Image (cartoon, rainbow, N blue to C red):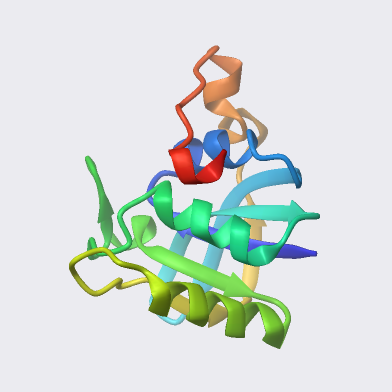
Length: 139
C-alpha cells in the first residue's frame, strides 16, 4: 500500500520514515491540492497503518499552521493524502486520538496529483550522511 504524508520539509520526514521497519520505499515529491503544492513523502509500506501514522505525527508538529520549524508556507503544511477509504478512516482516527494539548491541524485529503522531486532532492540527508533521530514511539 502507499500513502502520501506532508509535515514540513520532505528531507526530514523522508529521512525519519526511511528508518522504519515496514516502510519499503519512500519518494520525496509534491502533491497538488486546491490551494497549491505541498511537500510530501510517498510511502510504500507493509506495516500496520496505525503504527505508521502514529510515528508520522510524532515526527512533526501537527498543531502548527503551514509551518514546521524554520520551514514556513503552504508547502510545509501537515497533510495526509490517502488512496483508499480505509486509509482515510484510519488517518482520521489516529488524528482524533492525538494528545497534543492543541488541536491538530493536519488535513486528511484524497490523493490528487503527485510529482516526484528531482533526484538530487530525494534522500538528501542520507546523501549528506545525516540521520535524524526517530521519536521513541517509532521504535
